[in-house]
Length: 388
Image (cartoon, rainbow, N blue to C red; front, side, top):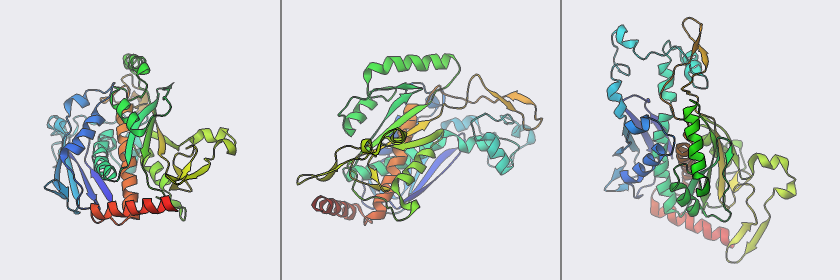
């Protein structure tokens, strides 16, 4: 499976094309719209989320509610485009109109300046429009398709925020993937500890009053993953490496870890490795999951636990200093619409990219022209693993 996305933040629409989805997968626009709505939610979101009500249009690859095996095309209309017709016009326009909303003051932490240098723009809006987190709309749409496929294979996925702007969220022990998904979905800040809800919301309100932003750490957990996805034979076939790349590719994400992650650097080997146990009922298991479901770049059957760190949103309502690209004079950076935090939404995006990488790997390993064939292949593999 592979996909491409296209579109600008204030352009007419966003598009994704997915190739390689098996035939016979039940798929409707409602399946995708549910996750698009989740991406736009969460406490602390700004004005753009009130303008757009993202709804997907499926224009190929699905007939009578089931995938056909042909490329799937997804579109999401940008309603805000109607206010940007001249600014984002495809055809050449008058010079006086080209200057509208022109950007020459790059924002620290954004792609504005480096993109302008790389592609030789005299208007940094060209960098801003494509590098905007609005692009993640389509990655969530693609991820929703991947999650439909995973659900058919009894693979469960959830995400929640574990650190909110430096505030660590205590996670009760013994929660299943389904428990985490339910608790996080009931929280406006996507946490599983309801006792911390009001504290976090008050913190976000204060950050907004200060004209500042906060980041944090999001965790995605996947249960029911088959053993042996990925490979140790080449560096670029390790599945945790592929997943790490996908997570860090999300706008504003700056790091990723699995299981204990960086904490493993502070412990002895005897405190990190997961002992192997076996029973007739379950086959091989690990007595703990410090390695986050991976050994040697391959899934070991334990839940995948992956965390990503998101930096604070760089667009500040109290802008930092920058330099005008025409005069080279110091200047306060351009202010575009911003949110004090987008952590709950970022978790939805992270869940989507993890699901996409996992679904892609499954279809690489197993015969997957159609869903019946894929389900049979995965079940046969699970039986083999249990009896090994």
